[in-house]
Image 1 (cartoon, rainbow, N blue to C red):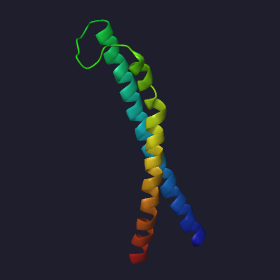
Image 2 (image 1 turned 30 degrees about the horizontal axis):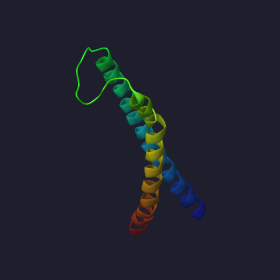
Image 3 (image 1 turned 90 degrees about the vertical axis):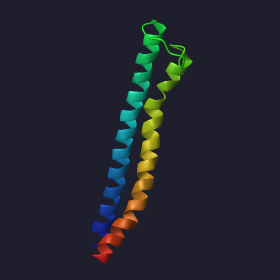
Length: 95
């Protein structure tokens, strides 16, 4: 019984980390490529903006979100899984 419970704990941790990392990757893609499109349009003077000068080093740095946001999501997912495991155990203990 203990091995089954430990497997379930690992499954909860694994799934929460995977889901949060996937959400982080999706948001990172949206942020980096969305910023690239806006910066390109500003550089080509198709739109005007007071918030961005166009293509610059900031555009390159925004692609760091493709690595950073999934990593942050993964860490958040692991922490979330570590919180959910005792709640899961408590739920089935009370049931």
